[in-house]
Length: 113
Image 1 (cartoon, rainbow, N blue to C red):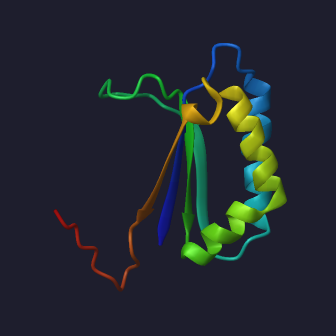
Image 2: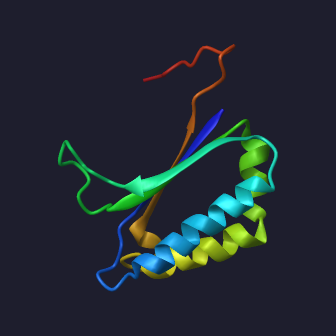
C-alpha cells in the first residue's frame, strides 16, 4: 500500500473556498479509480510545533503504485493540483509530498539505514 501524503504551505491570500473546491475534486477523482482505500483532508494542528508553515494537507491510501499512477494522470487531479499550486506560497514550492510504502498486511516493511 502507498500512503500519498500532501502538505500545503498556503499563501496569505489563499481562499478557503478554492481549497475546499480542490479537496472535493480530489475526492471525485478517487471515486473513479480502482485501488483507493481512503482519503482524509484537514487542518494541521501541529501539536509538536514542528510544521507550522503547513496549515493543511491530505492523505490518500492506494492499494499499489498502479492506482497512484492512475490518480496522477487523471485530468481532474491535474486541475485540482493546479488550484492547490495557485494557493500555496511560492506555488509548487509550497507543497510537500511523501509517498510512503507501508506494504500490506502480508508484507514486512524493512527500514534500512
